[in-house]
Length: 516
Image (cartoon, rainbow, N blue to C red; front, side, top):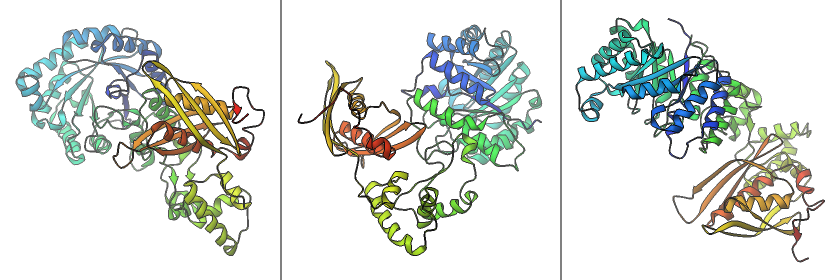
């Protein structure tokens, strides 16, 4: 048995089933092309019979990519299969993915049928799909809760009918890793023709075990894994592509490998997050913004001495430039000294560091997280003050009006006002701020949370991008627009000193000094 693990990406099918994450056909094609560059082996492009849009997407993805297999999902229904075959007609390597329920929950309550009849339907579906394409995958839905003896009968029957891949989904995320692994092993021990097909894992994350179950499947003989970027998918999501890829790459003692180009993972994650309007949780393994960030003093000290102390993956291996030693009030003297030396303040003695560290803690308590410019201010004894602050925020919005925002900002001690329209109240406010600072900044993450479950106060997190570097800001207020403005300005105040000092030089005509 080969140790190559085939990566079957279902971001564009299972991932897109998340409410609010639907994509247009051009967006799906863009993601599919990036998945091809990432090195996935199979792209599940959609469920063609479900809508004209899905049919069109499968067809256009089939035209757009060359190397990956393009797969269309169907039920064990002739018309589904016929429509999928039509959608896949331009695919260089087409696959039809058909199947039916395997657990008694599905057989009795979903289909009102019997085990024997369900197997017959599955066999007919495979044979019909085989009349259109050579590569047919069969899914045994809810296999995680299916009786193993019956499941083995079903798998053997569909392989005999011509299935080239058999998918063993833990559809509800129910299985424990030891049980899912044992289920795959049972199939290898009891299906006489199992060597004629690839066994695939499709695990959901309802109990947080999708990745562990998938790895257990691999260790017991599965050679295809069905995954999504960022682990998105129905309910709690699917197995995360980046987690499986980096497990295989990091654990050298495992003999398995994939074709994933791991340095493209962060870029891929960001693209999917933006297009699907689904932010990645900060502590998400591999690609969360905190995955390589160290704020604990003990951890920072260890990473500075040797990054292997707290990092098992090199940040550049997943497409990041470097790890992040985040300076906060929890940072220790070692982290502070490391950054000061990097900025040129070398040979500081322990005695010299004592007052510097005390001043640093005061600044960190005030500003929460510090950047290089803050450290320069610290070393030069400058009073820490915000270069920009919001003095007045007013927004008009509603169904009958185009949102317009009026903003007063104090910039380097002077007060200025600007107004702008936007697609929404926050967008209008940000456009007014952009006018005042003379530059349109890219917002690549915007999150809103309630404070302590209250509907009275909101917390907004914003991440802006300037010259390839990211700056984060936070805002808190009862009015979510004001909180959004505060977060945006908080991020802007972390930009380089030179930029902040020059904001009100060469003032544009479209804003004016208040009082003039």
